[in-house]
Image (cartoon, rainbow, N blue to C red; front, top):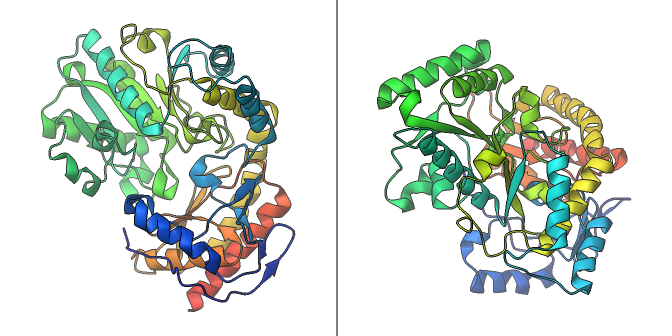
Length: 459
């Protein structure tokens, strides 16, 4: 990952004043510097690294600072605000809980919890019979790891083997990072779980993967079993799959996942999808895994599950979800009434408010325009990945070398022109506007983005 520090010295930028964007100060705003300096003084630097914009409010698909600037948001705060920033129905639901008041119940029951669970289960595929609520995505993937291993032991497996995938990322806690593939991020642990294995990812630029995805899976799993000396009958209990590879919105070929499903069913293994970035309408379907034509045993949800407050969940069958004994799996803030009210309002808005269809429909226009950009800049853009209102542009030079610094320049310049994009720190830029964005605003943002690419290449 390329190292990049955004400029925190205020610079003059052209004024912008359109229906959806407004930039009327230097950037970063001089008056914002004391706030940024206090963060640097009092907060761990691990929280830093984003562009120097101090948010004051956010509504719909717009972000505002306190000094009159307004941005089109193509980040959804990293795939969280699917239903839009400050969604009025979510705010109303939260105010209803505040007005009671009822902010916390630990694991005591509340009507908000019951109502949300009922709606969630009734509006998801039939194999998801129960849910378990948590606060963060990494908690959900850790929970799925535990459930797969409990099921494996109950089924007579001798080892609690998990197969994850190269390049995938599942969170920052220990089990999640062991299932993830970033070796540097795992150095702090000091050891690696010998029962967590990784398959190579079927990237579209790997010819053997794109020419025959099913065979690529079979060859990869056979090589892994031979290398590790493991048997799927006794040593493997589940697959953990990030629905798409986060940094580049890279999906698996459907045939790869379908072959994986056959293998899992044959050998009594569970399949879990990490749907943090993919779920709740982002890809034009309720869940991203639905593009593969398979049905998993477990899904881990977060981010867009509430479009606001800290909430995550694991969904699965009654048999698997009830494996932990009564009282043995909970979290301090699990299923508190505040987050449940937000989760219910959010899901109703996504399902009943037409946001999935908006994601699908606008997604077609979105990707058409992005592919036109790829055609315009073939020496710099190698791939457009994603589906629905999710996209990543992967930048490489003509020799295939990553253009990470160019991506950082583009991201910073977009910010100075009233558009926020996802800065990944590597050779990709991700785009993910709220699902309620209008066609007019989407096209304006894309126009700014395209012009910024052109100007950044010329520098």
